[in-house]
Length: 383
Image (tube, helix red, strand yellow):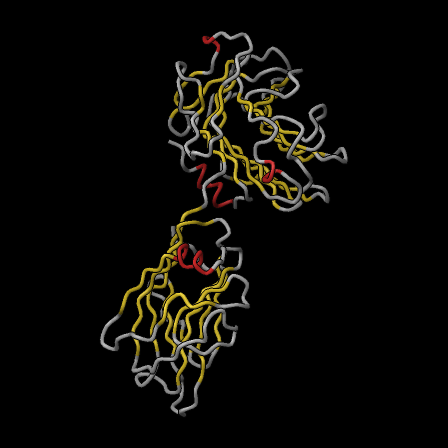
């Protein structure tokens, strides 16, 4: 995917950003012939905190530009050179590609493995990672200058820390983890009867697992993702769910639950089907006794719906079918959710309301707050 810059900064007297046919194109050349040296720089700012496999590509040619090399890295924000540099903090810069051996008669193309480059420098991606293209010389084109064409940054979103594809069948009721993060889980059948294990059915994305409402569940334990759910950490929990018209033996059944306190619903999040009026409720609970929830009527429509719960700082949000349905900022919204109680799919943790009769698919936990666009991408994956 193409990663778009969040900002484009420019400095110097000779920057031309008017030509943007593909990606970002830049002309860097002094505007006047005065033989006075000037530094022209364009800095692209990216939020790369959630990306991997990042590659920087562009084409470049020069107009008789004399080469100028930077000081050994790290160098400062005011360095004069001909090249491409990166900075994780906007203070210390490191060159990742020199532009001192360009041709004047044709473009040279570059494809830089940025992951490898920054790893060698001991850097890491963040929300304001900077890439700078710099030219330093003393005359305008065609005597001096550098032209950059089609600058693109390509990368992949960092995968979820847990991804249960729900693609198994009744003869093998182990939920496979396609992310290979060693969190494979097994359906629990307290009675030991293999006939009550969850079974494979057509899903929203490939196959899904049907929960019988009697004893099927996935127990992720009370240690999974402790760092992710700890105080001050952003996270996203997302899954597909489908409920039919079959009546429930009690008024509501949770199909996802995670609380801080094993004996209380204070501080945590859950999703449930309320059979009293056939609605899905998605809720965050806070230790001050308040809660933020969203309800979706007539949810026993035997139709797949995608749900996501997101925490970003002290703000919690609920999504359904790729659209944000509401958010709330609570002073203690970023408190600890990491221990004491198990993380369940298919049942409520105290069993007072038992197990949910539902079909679940493509369960994901991310160690970051997904954007609405990214959640929309999950929704658009439906078969």
